[in-house]
Each structure stands twice: as structure tokens, then as C-alpha cells.
Length: 87
View (spheres, rainbow, N blue to C red):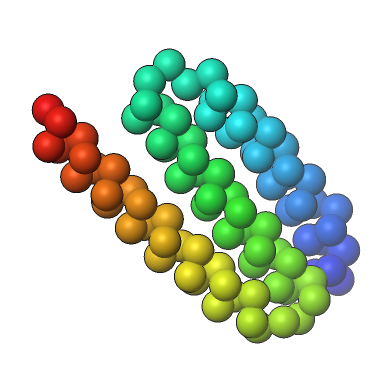
């Protein structure tokens, strides 16, 4: 049951979110807009990894998702620090 829901509902919606986020990443008028779009893209990737882990019943992929989330958070903090020193 959960396999069917994840395959027919969650993955297409996440794919649509990736496409819309890529448009914002490419067209973003400023650097902070692009960074926020990149953070959103990695968050969507976390959702895709999580859905895949549920579908395949593999707990290892959740560890990968946690690692990606930590790296993304560190990147956001580094960018915020960069903006603080720049201004």
C-alpha cells in the first residue's frame, strides 16, 4: 500500500517541485535567491531519498539523508556568514 502511494503520488509531486525549483535557481534575480533555491533543491532531494528508503525498505538511505541535511545546513550557515561580513 505505501509503495503504491509513494510511487504514484509522492515521487511525481517531488519531481514537479524539482523542476520548479530549478527554474528559480536559474532565473533567480540575486545570489541569495539562488542560494535559497539550492537549499530547497537539497531539501527536496532529502524527500526523494526518504521516499526511496521507504519504497525499498532500506534504513541505510535514511543515514544518507541525514548526512546530506547536515552538509546543506553547514552550507547555509557559511553563506549567511559570508553575507554578514560582506554587508
